[in-house]
Length: 193
Image (cartoon, rainbow, N blue to C red; front, side, top):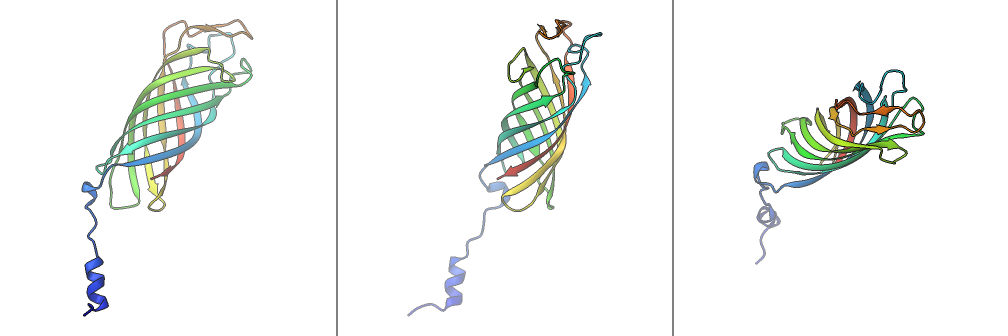
């Protein structure tokens, strides 16, 4: 004898795992934004063009996120900045790793906080003329678009050191006072889970 279709449907029903019991997942992010200088005295000596002004860029990151919202990430970004024509095309490249907390909420809006460390290289047209360490703090929100995609919006504050170098076009010595530089970045990204 066969079971009624309603009984077979009940047997096939499986209760999903509670969110805190789900396995960690990979989250891929592609972001862009605008960078604004905050502290540039070391790279912009008086009487010379400033090699670190505003601009835009693109980056990517990979995060391993746990159900609790904590995750670790690695990322790369290339930022194309105005350099007062001292460089043909000023490019800041950033490689970083860190931790991120995406607050689980009952709504589609999730606050996000991140702290990362890394290295940066800066120079003319992907040629690295100065390198240094980087610290980045990020705060923003992730908006769920559906189960797979999200939109990440926020602001990052970056502080970075740099080695001493001389720009060829104007002969100015830069980065020789040991002071770090700072920028702010308005960022928007697409997350894929």
